Image (tube, rainbow, N blue to C red):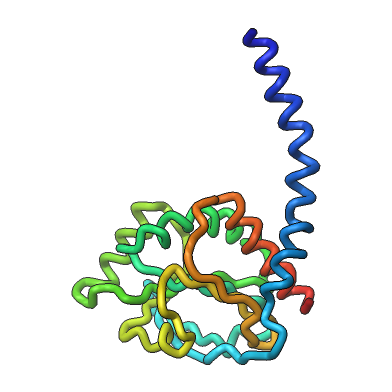
Length: 186
């Protein structure tokens, strides 16, 4: 019975590999329908990250920028991190793709230290920016978190996605599809 189960698992894995690789293409088709058709310039901002370095969105023009508005107390935000990390790791060597995690709606007291502890505890190497007065979230029209945006190489918002669907694999594929479409300018 154990041998039959192992054979079944192997057969299932072999048949799913091509389907998984085709999923990105089918996801791209679906995601393309969600792409903003008109050019909507991403509001420029300058925020400091956890190391105190200033990051200005307009300085990243020419790159695809993934923005994730989140908070440590937000369950869906934290639940979405493993899928985003998977995609961020895939693009780690691609200097034309940047991931920024904008901490918003956080309690001001000890905010930076609390964010640092959270990221270290979870072992994420995210570039976390601090939206101290939620001004950047306001500029982007963020009404709920998690809220994700993909900004194209021209500085236009191509995708906006609110919430977390609960599926790590589906979320990772959707983010990858958004990034690839933004890179291709399609």
